Length: 230
Image 1 (cartoon, rainbow, N blue to C red):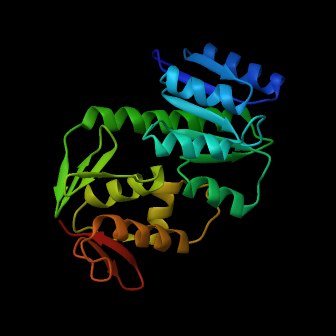
Image 2 (spheres, rainbow, N blue to C red):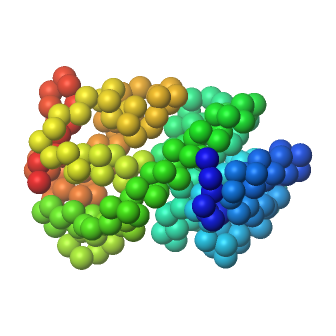
């Protein structure tokens, strides 16, 4: 893996872990910025324009979820990988639903972290290369900018909401099973259930359908999954 000039921000209060991650990322060609607390991490996220953030949850000043919320509220669309000693399923679901792109519990193996970082960065590179917009109904989707407008007004989607909608709109008419959606959007290691997909679909319909109770675009295929109709 080569960093190709990309910047990774590591926000971690454990000095040994923070410096170890920074060293490993630099050896792989990345520019690395580090922060030891929430305030410094948030400032660096705005000032350094990183291509990816590796974010601990339990931080001094304020925690990782507060950083994540601030980034998403201000439409900073950088991929965020959470590192946390909190390994319960509800902690993972909370982090992902609030806009994280991935969640890795401590302790972890470095090769797994590196692989997850590469997946997130590859997805970001691909979205930038594709560019162009997709339009349906009142919605305009810009994959490169990871931006959605409805009737000309910008709407906020979490990272997973955007990825789920992008999966559907780029394969119109194709039926996606809930299990396949989980694997494509959340990854093989995600421990949630297919109900996660249903909950995210419900939220997406509220945001992009004119009548969410009678959707025209995000269609349920009974007992199987969902398909997109432009």
